[in-house]
Length: 193
Ligand code: ITT
Image (cartoon, rainbow, N blue to C red):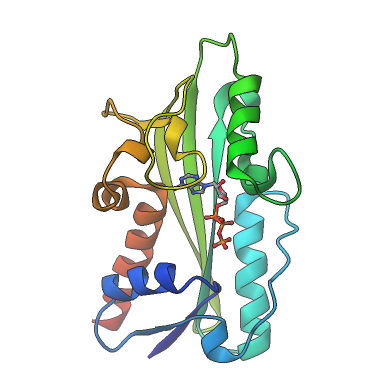
């Protein structure tokens, strides 16, 4: 069985391949001849994951899934949210995004935030949604050099270190993305058994 992942990122695809039963093969967009970037113009993280999955399904008529993620900060009304990659400027610059976030939170005591991933799976023509949430706190100075994006300022609940200070295996065990992917792969395993 073949499942198309709406991404050009081979690393993401490899990671999810390892979580799936043998017999289920993940293909990336390039593997199926989709070379263009899919425009993510939805108003929410969920909408963007659906836009990407719908696009691939329309083009290929095959089982497929798409993910979208973002950081939601309580006191900022859920911002940067769907705009996480382009918070400070249209073309994603993690440093600038991070600086703007810290700026917007300066002097604010409530630093609660969460990373959210939404996966839209189109399987045998039906849509299934899987969500992963990782709650935590935004600190006021970046710490650590691992990960990407907002990792240096995010401390997940139950930890004293940021995602950027954590080794990648540990982050991949507890992250929003890992949780959402695990939900999807568990569901697929159930289907396949
Ligand atoms: P795609 O090409 O797969 O779309 P992306 O960089 O847009 O990659 P996501 O959709 O997963 O990544 O996430 C959107 C933004 O949300 C991302 O650019 C980061 O700013 C932020 N983000 C998401 N997951 C994150 C994580 O685990 N750690 C830090 N920042 C994250």
